[in-house]
Image (cartoon, rainbow, N blue to C red; front, side, top):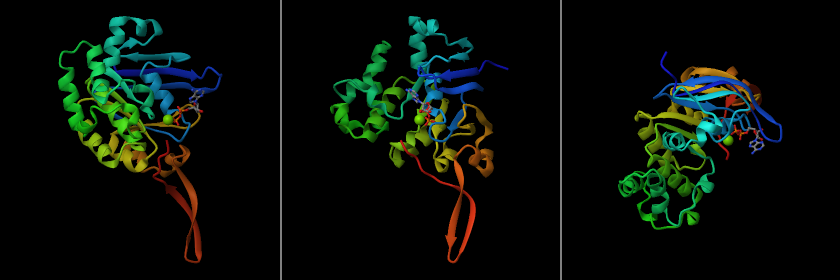
Length: 264
Ligand SMILES: Nc1ncnc2c1ncn2[C@@H]1O[C@H](COP(=O)(O)OP(=O)(O)O)[C@@H](O)[C@H]1O
Ligand SMILES: [Mg+2]
């Protein structure tokens, strides 16, 4: 089997306050896969994405990127950190913290410039046009709406031409047109995607494989997305669907139900 692009082996994670999130998490993602990460609120989706992005070190077990163990010392090596930060990117659920440049133009150009790429201006033009940000290029990022900030943050990441793109609940703040654009643009690209959501209505369009967290730090499911979405007991066990009483005229009955909601 070729090396996975990203591999979690027996990963445990506990927050500094001692609260465990994961105890023993193992999965591998091959280059080009489109993976949807599902789990109820608090199941650990954002934590898993931060681990995958090298922002949090596992408390036990290991995470490998292209067969290399992502150790804190490797992440401190300048050459590795540079290529890793370019290739493996994460769009935060609340990306405000990512934006610090005086203008949107400088914000999008920042990453490519840090990498010493000569065509940073062309990259700004390309991704601003793709995401409809042209009229905002001279605006200060902090003056934008939440959804506009999310688009700018996404443009910043795409300007790096990453191989692996993790998106944390993108449909929570992006408008439907942008989510549609994401689906059309990203699913056809060779990029490897790991997208978290608890919006089951959208999940079907975001990928081919599902990883489902059970809410107790374990993987409940790793397999074809379509099969998972048709398995109500599985979705119920993951806290993504629930049994629920309905009144139909005079009759009341209970049945399993899936809700499409997404909170931030
Ligand atoms: N910075 C933090 N410090 C301590 N606990 C945290 C922190 N961030 C998240 N948690 C906890 O970790 C668990 C998983 O959270 P998270 O990964 O954000 O879940 P999800 O993204 O699936 O909603 C939750 O119990 C949450 O309260
Ligand atoms: Mg989250």
